[in-house]
Each structure stands twice: as C-alpha cells, then as structure tokens.
Amino acid sequence: MYIFLNDKIVPEPEAVVSVYDHGFLYGDGIYETMRAYEGVIFMLEKHLGRLGRSASFLKLRVPDEELIRRAVYQTLDANRLSDAYIRITISRGKGPVGLDPALCTEPTFVVIAEQFKPYAETLYKEGVRLIIAKTRRNLAEAINPMIKSLNFLNNIFAKMEAKERDAYEAIMLNAEGCIAEGTISNIFFIKGDILCTPSLDTGVLDGITRDLVIGLAKGAGMGVREARFYPEDIFGAAEVFFSNTTAEIMPVSKVEDAIYGAGTVTRALRDLYRERVTRYVEENRGRKG
Ligand code: PDD
Picture 1 (cartoon, rainbow, N blue to C red):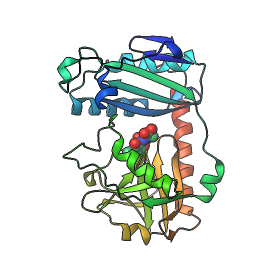
Picture 2 (cartoon, rainbow, N blue to C red):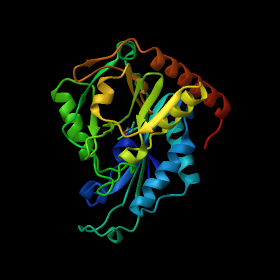
Picture 3 (cartoon, rainbow, N blue to C red):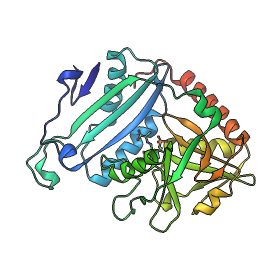
C-alpha cells in the first residue's frame, strides 16, 4: 500500500509521523472521509469545501485545494484503486510539547486510500439497530460538531456504548436532549409524509450525504423538515435511516425498543441516491482532480 505523506507518495512502512505531532499529542487536526466509485471521487469538491471550513475553525494552514485534489488522485493511482475508501488527515504538525499552534511550523498532510469494503447487503435489507447514547454530543460552544476534527473522543464514547449494547450505531443527543446525530452519521426519520432530520443548529456535522438526501427528497416532491427533534419523535416515526459517505443510506430496524417497518421511502431515497452516484460518475469520469 502507498500513502501520500506531506509532498509525496511513499510505501506504507515509510509513512510515519513524529511522536511530537500535535495531531497525536492533542488531537489538533482535521480529516475528511470520501468514497471513490469506478475511479471517480464522489462529491470531491464538497469534501474539499468542508475540509477548508474545518481548517478555518482551527486556523489551520492547509495545502491548497489543487494540490490536495492531485494528491488524492495520485494516491488512488499508486494503489491501482477504483472503488475506494479515502481519508485525508491534516494535523497541526510536529512541534515542541505545548498547546500553542504556533509551535508547529508545517502541517502534516496524509492521504490514505484502501479498497472499499462493501457493507453486507443484509444490513440494507434488514436494517440496523441503534441505541440512544448517554454520551451527549459536544456543545457547539465547546468543540463545534461542524468541525470534522481529529478530536473524536466524544463520538468514541458513544460508539463504546453502542458496542456494549450490541447496537450498530448510537444516536447522540445534544446538551438540551434534542436528537443530534450518530457517531459517524446523520439521522433521518419519516413522520407522516415528511422527511425529518435535525437542523444544523442542533449541533451536527453538515454531512455531504445529508445535504444530498435533503435535495433528492425535495426534488422528488417530498416535504422535508429540518428542526429540533426529541427521542419521542423518532420513537413514533414510520421509518428511520442514517446517512454517511461510506454507507450512503442505511435503514434502521430499531431504535431502543421502537421497531420500524419495511422502509419504502428509505428504499426510494436509496434508489435516487444510487442514480445520483451513477450520474456523477458518468459526468466526472477521467477527471484527475
Ligand atoms: N463520518 N456526522 C458525523 C459525526 C460524521 O463523522 C459523519 C461522517 C457524518 C456524515 O457525513 P458525510 O455524509 O459527509 O459522510 C455525520 C465519516 C464517514 C467518517 O468519520 O469516516
């Protein structure tokens, strides 16, 4: 496997980062997860846009977009990948111990690309089980969930709860008890004919998939409600799913003790999503950044 590290492709064993890297010492950095279909990186420009927004929250200097785009495609090529999981990580870089970002002169820039491992089809057919975690989502005034940061302990705690309770994913509430998001996903549910999802001001990541799903639903003439919701709202829903870049749209069969049915709306949205992917791949084939 080959990794893009700072300014070049290197074999994985040579892709090493200093123990003084502030990403390692303090979680000071950001990342993006992307998915490539048939050699085309889906919604690359949206991911780069969000990477840029995360960087400005941290006042982190990052390589320019052009360079990142080339690095990402170079990493795909070096590993001869077509359907891939891709991760960009940018940390504050190496510097003496201490919190001051000015101690680090150069950010560390890493691109990892691996063969995409498809999710089991039974998960999409049967849906997955979710719990509501006791761990609350970070306050926007503490670490804004809009930042896709390396500081992931908040989500890791909720994931540990999910694992302990044999669930696939955990829903985190915000400090006020409103439904926020999953540990690595946005949450949707259907109530009446309306597609509901927590509004961004609830304190969630502005998921690229979330945004696409909202657009697809509106385009299909569905009502969409972005608002503050509570656990009772999801318990009384007809269908529930979560969204993210890697799983796309994943049906949910259970949240705590509430059970959800066949999911015709979820399936229809999933079909629209797949069509969107196919169209995007056709339109962007051959682009290398
Ligand atoms: N996670 N919320 C959180 C906390 C996330 O970490 C993610 C993505 C999402 C969905 O965002 P998107 O649709 O842009 O993937 C929502 C990725 C998959 C990850 O951590 O690897």
